[in-house]
Length: 329
Image 1: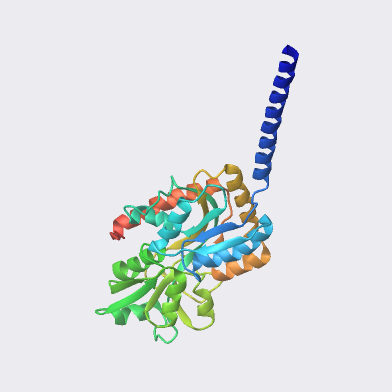
Image 2: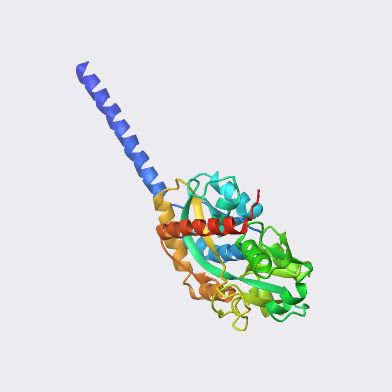
């Protein structure tokens, strides 16, 4: 009996250890196999905008590198907050990612409660790059320069379209047209750059204040006319377009950026893997040429570097929001 019990005990212990070892192997294998299914990339803005253009261009290559479909899901609205909320509540397993712009750093101060906490609910994955904004008008507009637009607009109302309330293009447009130029300018917000561009193409608004990527193709095609760029120096994609400084407003600069985020508590191994897959894509010749043509200055780096940049952006926009008094609530 004693011997039989010992044998039974041994078999039970051996079985338990085997199951435990098998479980550890499966778990390790699962981690090493990431991703084992399609990855959903929630873009916080509408189709055709800055974030969408970058997400789709990078997404094609990311799918190839990961060996799984990368599905872009546009969830625009509330200045990017709707898409951000979706990802903030998603499982931290690397299968739901967020693509957002500088708007997410702006909204941390613009809204009393955006529905998420930028530090508590997300982990930065990769910063793809940044781009200045453009001030453009319909091709039929008689203005050839920014001052041509401003001078006759004194004393009357002027409308300007942006990617949404609290977007960097909104803050830039308000600061330039209202604060600096002294115009009676009415903000017309859209749910992303795509709809804002469509409104400008339809001549439904007088001015378009937006980041470069969704605007440049229409400028080159002659459908829109770029009056000024919000960088300190001219840019290669539109070398003939003067800066806002050249137009008479020294030191004016506004840049937006596009970055990937994952839900908080996503394993570091997955975050680092995604970062390591996204960064090389930015240097692939055909990808780089298309990003350059859109005016996006690539900025590959580590998740930690992106986190530090994000912190500085939150502080910068908080100061600007306090100065302008703009609020979304």
